[in-house]
Image 1 (cartoon, rainbow over the protein chains, first blue to last red):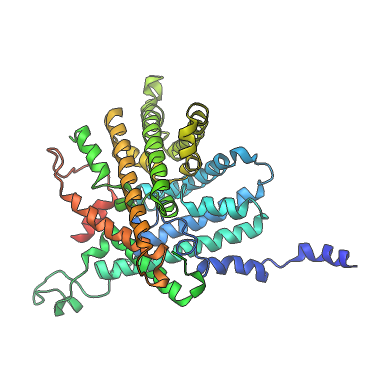
Image 2 (cartoon, chains in turn red, orange):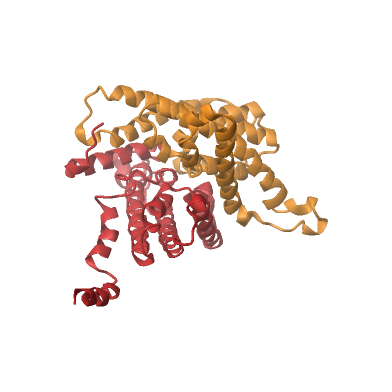
Length: 233
Length: 227
């Protein structure tokens, strides 16, 4: 009887069972690919100067992790293990070419700003890491969700960093000036809003090293809240 | 015009792969616990960059670039295969890494013992593909310039990882707040080192002023945001 139950139950596992939901939610916090698994910092930090760039980069990575995980998982039993890295790289590269061509066609300015970093999604460690660790050993649907979760964890972190850097460095979010205008005009010698009171943008935030320090602080906050993540040196 | 020496020095200091572009951060963070392993990985990165960038340069200029196929047949002058460049570059990188691994294993077992475990890691090190993509974006005029760029980038990466590994060896004896231990403090130190490296931006290279028609790079975006 138990065998029969097993038989009927296995295929009817709901698409969003508890286990599958965990695949999406875990990487957002306690198993974040960037702050906990230390993957995918490579191409991430240089493009967090503006929220818009961070968002587009995040969406591109979500697309590539999802589809890459799905495709690799679907053909995982056909890949000879000696050349699996090359097979994975070629599939990921094909997906990244799609992203790059779409960006170049519909958002040429943004595509020029992101410059080589779209291409570098190929070697983004999150993608290879999840392919190796998850997609090679699991069925396509959970792999897709795992890719979605990890992509969102990465995108979330990018957006948090980008919000800090754009707000403190340029005084705007998505290009909308929130703190008034720093440009002097008639009647407003110092600009408007906060700038009229003598506030200045922190230009340091725009420079690359601050991205690292902000991520360091995010890790600090996260590990203070969740003691289980603390490392022994 | 930049001289070859300018390109070389620039790639080491003011356009350092780690501190200016964050390329290869994953292995930089993972393999920088001791100086010895850091030296091994750094040497392997220099080696692979110097081999792959010139090969990719030839591919780019004789196969992929718009009009690059003209040397085969004048009728193909308007073919532009540059959309294939990602897949070609990564295939070249992955296969050269595999080839180098086999050659080193066969002819220099001692070197293989030292580099062995790092070589496969390097295929997915962003700095290798990043080197190829920057070479494509900046359109170096000769293969010598491209090689100088790749050697400089490799040395810059080497300096960065060896320096952070030395600092991490020392920091083991300091009182770091528990939540910052390991990854957190490494990020912050890298940020501070990046600030120190930014002082190299003041170096005046050759005779060239600001290039007007150069493709937009991240550093230019940063500058235009500053204005």
